[in-house]
Image (cartoon, rainbow, N blue to C red; front, side, top):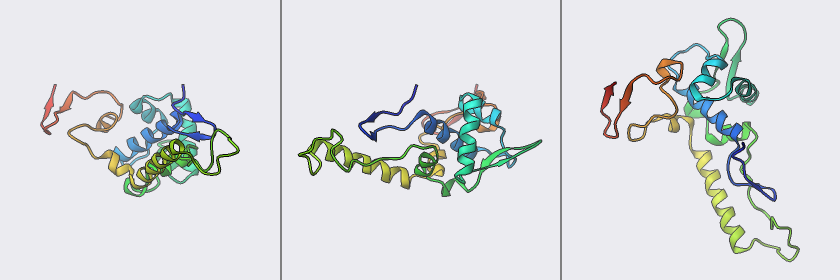
Length: 174
């Protein structure tokens, strides 16, 4: 099921492929291990089917967001530091453009400029585009109120470690 909603040529949400791509890039950015991560490791950690993820990772490598290393000990790593990769970079690499509304999406001939509703929607799309362009993967990695994205990367497996962090920053092992 795709999270992409299209209405006459403009998308309002990102696709499932782009969400998976963002999860993978965030996971790679969180890893402490300098060796490349296998597609299986990434898939297990971010809860994505490995076959689909492999295709996404190859697309990200072609876009210069990740690097792929073949052979024994091969896998994927970020091509640049997380602070140099924006959410928009990942969205564009995974074929989710943030499309602005430039003309009446209903095709009404008399509408030479956007009506109030479509102007409002376009302004919100523009704001989302600016936010995606100014938010780096490093921004997504930083825990907010003790909540870390995805799973604990220290396990490498995506399994819960028994470590919990409360909203006040206190850590406890269960």
